Amino acid sequence: MVSSQRNSNSDAINMPLASLRVLDLGQVWAAPLATRHLADMGAEIIKVESHVRPDGRGMPLPDNIQDQDWVDLGGAYNELHRSKKSITLNLLTPEGVRVCKELVKVSDVVVENYSPRVMKNFGLDYDVLRQIKPDIIMISASGYGASGPWTNFGAYGNSLEPMCGFAAVTGYSDGVPRRSGIAYTDPTGGPIICFALLAALNYRRMTGKGQWIDLSQYEFGVTLMAEPVIDYSMNKRIWEQVGNRNRAGAIQGCYPCKGNDKWLVITIASDDEWSAFCHALGDPSWTKDESFSDILGRYENHDKLDKHISDWTSDMEPYEVMHTLQKAGVTAGVVMTNKQMLTDPHLKERDFYMSITRPESQLFGTRLLPGVAWKMSKTPGRFRWNAPKLGQFNKEVICDILGMTEEELDALKEKDIIGYEPKEGSLQPPRIVPLDELKNRGRIEEYDEDYKEILANR
Image (tube, rainbow, N blue to C red; front, side, top):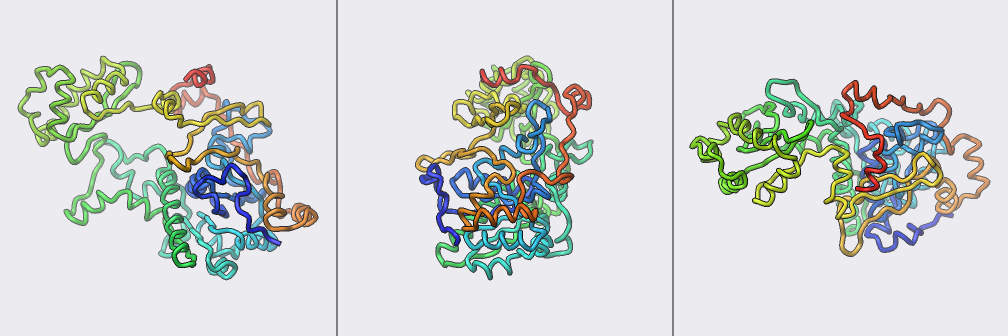
């Protein structure tokens, strides 16, 4: 006997998505981030992974140390999977697939981001699921979509980002193409997946019909590059790398500030902003140069301008420059490190970061993680519980929601359909590299031995 009750946890009752149940088969980043956003808004997210092949649970680990509980302590895992319910199902077995199908019957949405062949090989593709539950909404956020010559290509954000054209326009004009530093299609993909799901849910509300969403991460990545694509279609121009410049005008640049590797970005988009900028600097003589009098002149003489601006910013702290220019009405922002983001007074005032504690782990202690990405006046999202241990909600989901007995639950474990720890050899602990070695390799700039005290006093 299955249960139709949704989100019995009382903390979710006044949250906007409290009635939504999502079966989350997502892996790594993009799809898990999407369901994390939904969980922040109160949706019941049943995170399905296999103890034979758990989802990524590794780095970064607390204090760059690996202990016996590392599987549940990774920072990325805790940020992506908060307020979710983890169950383990071995979908390579008929019994695991059968249980998954039972979960589909009582769910609203199924989310996955495998290559298209995977769900079909499981016997869990949309044609199968809609026979089980006609109004189910399924989103398949694969790398290249469910059709086309590249449909079954493997894809990670690190490879999709250059494929979408980002690297071709990122970097300096005399250098090689550069990635952004993160797998850019993953963090941007999470909100896009959410948008598609909410649109499908609204369609079902109006019509009673479900649907399948074939979402290509390659394609939505290209939509983020609309400007260069449109420029070529209109003007036959192929964009090149321009560093920190703006093709539409000047000033746009990143400037050195006082201190070691301290930087600030300045954007000036109009003559009025240029005038305000000059006044903020005290109208030095170089600002009277006729070659800087209009946008085109400033664009054509950007190198000369950058030298003057750098001479001014290099004697000031980046926050000092930012506040001086912002007060004058000129857009400027500090180039922040991850440390500066965590200690930023603006984010602290807005109560953006949340503190989480894992009582079962002395190593984990209390940590800061990014909070909910937006604020709602009536139904604010919030953190409800820690990212679950592997299989932590097996009993609640399989017995309470699906109505199976504890004897049947035990039988699933005996048959290796479910589990509560990674199967031996299925998940290798990440290799811990000493911080000094990371610094010598150029992977990190610096580290603070007293970082906990710094964060506590932020």
